[in-house]
Image 1 (cartoon, helix red, strand yellow):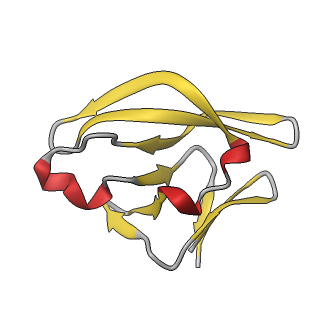
Image 2 (spheres, helix red, strand yellow; image 1 turned 135 degrees about the horizontal axis):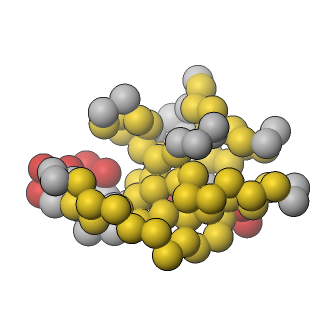
Image 3 (cartoon, helix red, strand yellow; image 1 turned 90 degrees about the vertical axis):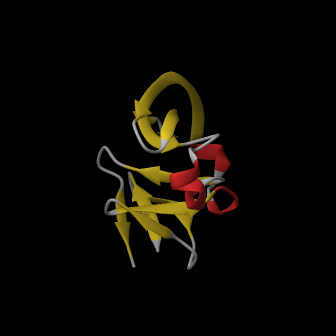
Length: 93
């Protein structure tokens, strides 16, 4: 699977975990040069507290387009150490 935004591959892996229709990529499959820390956090009742990254690619920014659960609840343990994408990031095989 590949995550693509603004013409660049942000992450690529054959080892994704699908939860609620979202592909969670291993953290080490992401091109960190495109990520910027975000102060945004949200809470999911069964997964826990999510943190976010924003994308910066070739001068374009996509705020909070990447999310992850640093300490997911037990029910979502399979996504620990993984990230997912939204806000126009295309995920394809």
